[in-house]
Image 1 (cartoon, rainbow, N blue to C red):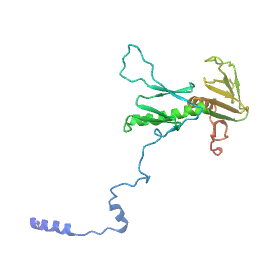
Image 2: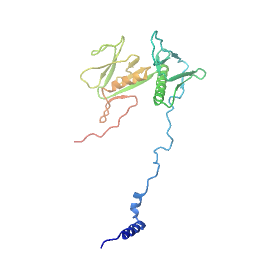
Image 3: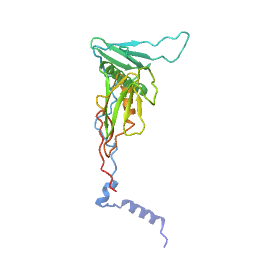
Length: 249
């Protein structure tokens, strides 16, 4: 028996008026999620304030702002960077958009940028400030790195000459490592860095430039990285390593 058009309409209306009840364990699955997701941190996001922080200048350290040298007959569209000289021992180049101000009364230096909303200027703002702070600390106090040689027969000495390398500048010294190799390991001390061995298993590096001191310490450490089973290797400053259990066959 064919169903008439009116009968079909009645069935659709009855289906729309039916109320379905879900089981309790299915209710959470059909609930709508909140409009705003919960944040991991409750504090509002803020940009770094490293660049705007003032730098305290020690009494025995003097800073001088040097203008870029003028080139006769040369026309350039890019403004050459200025340089801050620290006691004639170190210098930091300022990007064109970074300004330097020194308060003689409080002995504090501050840096500023042209537009804080530009990402590149914000990034170089804090980077330039950190470079300047590290150089001031290096001139006044100096940067050091202490390396510890842990292992049977591991020794280090500082020699005025080397067998496998030629000096890069007059008076260069070399760090001679004995760390389990059959060949001599000799590393030239960079210019501006002083190396000494207060103990046969200790290497003391001193210098004004923090980047050069830490890079040379990392190059020495590369010859014997600390291993996690016996705890042997070359450790820099307070570096430690978590020992793993021995492999049992």
